[in-house]
Length: 355
Image (cartoon, rainbow, N blue to C red):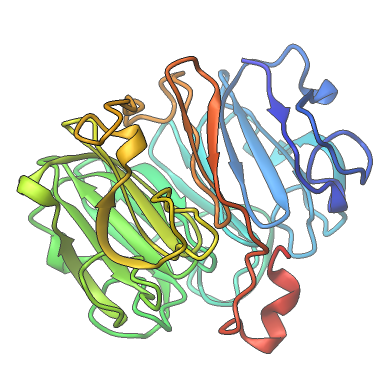
């Protein structure tokens, strides 16, 4: 798999080409030539790639150590994270300015910006290199995902853990308190979690029996439960005819899901058309994307990607400004584009928002 980056901003070296230039067509990252990449993750201004051999390369902005290279200097090209020498990494996840990883042995790591406990290391300090989370009571982790300032992980036994910032209830523990180490989400203790996704301030979890739960910040209906109130505990998202969900993905303020019937649904912020409904309305319950669903007017269908992001199958996650899915020819269909601005962003965090 060759790694390329597409039309986006190049400040902080986030594109990995050794400069700060923007790009408007995909270009191979020369520093990764010859490496077999199995997974990538992008934060606000930093990127990571995991090779088939379990090594991790990182590049881009690094003011809080989110690259894991032992310094706070930005990197214009991918560099290998030396701290993982001898450790095979299964997957990585990137928050705004923090990073998490799970090893093939089930160990959980965190590094970068730690102000809200989002590294899971028991304090609010930054880390310049990956550090192992040691408070899991012997549980081995299977997957990890990041929101802006919070982290979500799932154990081999399907148990869900969250930690970090919880001002909007995005940790799902029934309160709005930050947690500095991973805490099990007790309300889903009887469910086997098979997929997780983190939005800016909301969280989604998919169970093995196809049920989707959401919680956290819900100003635009991105939790999908029929209201616009924040939720500090998981709430079941309902779909027409009780369709079972096979995949979920979060943008900053919107969410998408694919069901067993190969129908695509979206909800949340729609002001820039990112929901794909031919309008610019917000939605607080799942609404079918007609053009991409078997039960839609066009009959075009979107195949769900494999639930294991490391299987080698290609998949694309929506961002806060776009919803992108492959059509039958393998090309991408883009829906909507905007500036991503939000008046609810705290004044001291405006610099962290892509404009």
